[in-house]
Amino acid sequence: MVTIDDIREIASGLPGAYEQASYGGQPSWRTKPRGFAWVRDEPEALVVWVGSVEEKLALIGSEPGKFFTTSHYDGSPILLVRLEGVDRAEAAELIEESFRLRAPKRLVAELDGG
Image (cartoon, rainbow, N blue to C red):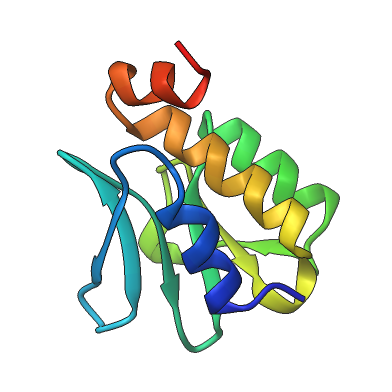
């Protein structure tokens, strides 16, 4: 099970990333100008961007105990991940992918060492 502290460490370690409170007061991580990950409660979950709505639906279909969505995110490539459903390595992979989709290209290049 991944914890919020694990998520904080992973997300904050990405180039240009910073933490701020989300609308509900839960932590979120951004690079200017966009967010790439946040935590929500009820149920507690990591929220990340994926490449497409089709990818989101495929992930939910493959492991509904791990991945889910709500009507609030219908039509968007935003995936909810149950914290008890993933370990730190899986969370890191999801957070990094979301970062790659949302961060400026210069920060992605920095992540890749270039």
